[in-house]
Length: 469
Image (tube, helix red, strand yellow):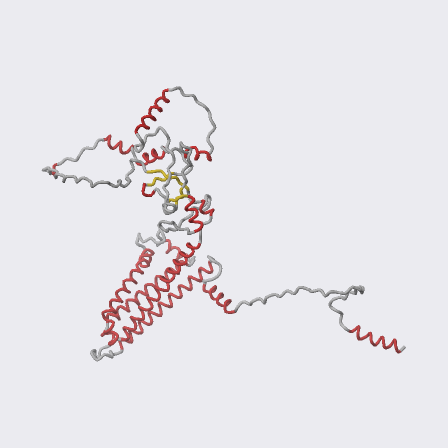
């Protein structure tokens, strides 16, 4: 009984213990030695918590409208509001400083002994008046900015809509004529940069002429003028020059780094070279002379007729005018291009000094001309022979034979192949700047070196695909 009681007393505390987390599976004992198993241990890098300052700065930028979803109406409104408030605060602070310093200059006596019992304002009135003119310009600018800001807000009041319809300009939002209430605002807004530049130039001249004297006799007035000059210069460089330089530098770096892909290069049009016609107004340069040219005698002056005022105007025949109207340059150009027959690519006429590739320095090859068309540059014997053949064929009996129409892929080979079975002329790439190069040369240049023209360094614009806006 004692053993049973002890066993019950020993089991009770064991039963009170919590159950094990993982169930223990009993496996039969084997006589083979066990090898310890290694479980792979993976360490995960601790994740960085976002800094509070970065989140706070991002939140501030979103509130100010300089971060967030692009082109969202809330962001645009916030940014316009922040810009408007910044301009208002800057303008009002300048106006207050100018007025306070001018009042102080009108009360304070000049410290220079040459001007006893005179105020600083009376000693240096030019700079003081010019500072007050800048305050007037700030008031005008503040009014224009406020008018533009409130005009952009959606106001649906009935009286405002009636007033806006009465003074609305129907042509364009920036139209000045006819000179209405809105046109006056637009005119003043366009004249503001001119007024600012003129004021700044005259202020520099006044400081150079009266600056040293006003510094000794009227330090308050000169301090106001120098403060305005510093503020205007800083505002110009921060808002105009620095963004312009940054945008230009970033655009140049982006354009120089990025090369054209093969798909973009294939979209650049291909053309074929043809020489200028003999009737072209662009004449090639004359050949070099091997001997000195003969000196032509001085022409005798023409006799001047008397009674100049009674001279009748020369008569022009109607036939000359009709011939000029009929023989237009477009007809001559199309007739010249027709002598080369149909080609798979457009034809480009180039003078002799531009008929060579600027990369490989090889001359361009023109397609073969069709027979039966006379050319002034060709030999006369071939023209006569061609004319006789045409005449004999015209008088002979013509038999119509129905043949299959040529395929588009064979048109180039049929028209561009030479009589000696030579290769067809290589096509040329016509860049957006107007320069042409061999297709293989310029393709390698645009895909490996730069996306700029090798000659004029202009950025090559790739035409858009058909169907894309």
